Image (cartoon, rainbow, N blue to C red):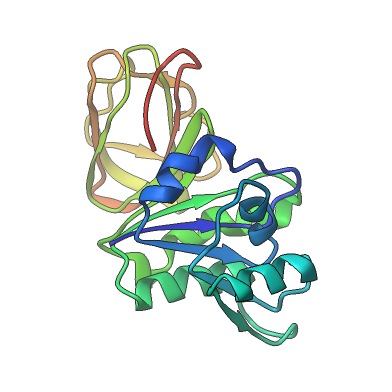
Length: 218
């Protein structure tokens, strides 16, 4: 099941993702992420959070349209986005795209990247999406679709990643180690799409910057 989660990000415009939102089996707004959906006329299936960022008028409109609103206490251990991720998994999503997760406060953006390592997401396809870039976590082997010339960065998450081997990238790695505190994996590029990457030990974040002229669908 394909789910899209919209995080609460300042000035986030959901318009470029309208087709994907229409095709999703489950659309979840993490609190104020619902404001961006309402702005383009999309009603989520579910709104999750303490609802301190959701415009009250938007909340009333969503309820009237049949959306489910689940309010949680303000004082809680999880962010609204983490609650949304866990609920998407609970409802059977195996593909999850997250919109609006980067931008605004650095602490929240870093935490949103780190949440890709949640144990509940093992075996699922989960991406952070923006208009011209995406990020996803590799625990074993992954394909990197795209076009020749796209920029790809490989960033170890939570410590060193070992046994990294790539195909289809300009700077090849063969059973290499990338270290958390070093920048070696930044700004590679696809030369033979689709590229591939595998990691033997550790977590590897793939950040894929698409060329602006590249036509693709979400």
